[in-house]
Image (cartoon, rainbow, N blue to C red; front, side):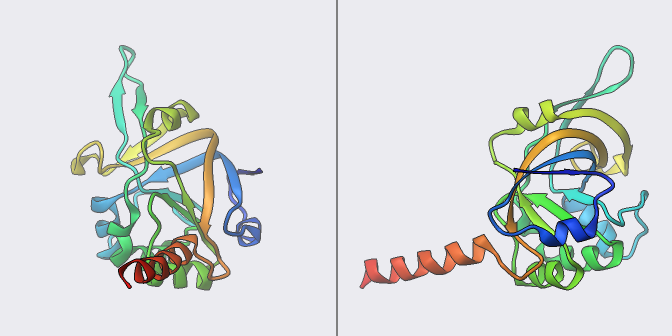
Length: 189
């Protein structure tokens, strides 16, 4: 297991390889459909994303009696929906990593390689487990998109992820797709 803390060092990120188990501590930012489209369309990010990790998630967040935000669930969103946008966002905003589920496509894989970033897979169905690892909501931006679509800045501790696409052009998702295709072709004959 590898421990990474923010501010995230791109040189450390570049050392990661497919299959590495990583625990993240520090600041990560959420952004899914509305945020990714917003950034892709050339809008400025309300916060500096250079060296940051973007988590494809639509968290369930409530306010407690004191008015503090409390994260109740924060599972990953299927990342392939962001494929049209993600490479450009990595390039323009200097992301070092993306977290989501299911992997991403060729365009994003090329951007990970070109800009020294990785894709972290988070476990689908573990939304409450991930919420426990979120220790604090530092800020929220673009709340006009709705709570799940807003850009949340979380302080996390020992947030578990697995590298499934690395900065060397390797993709566990691509490998599984190719091996599954071979098996399928044998089955159908």
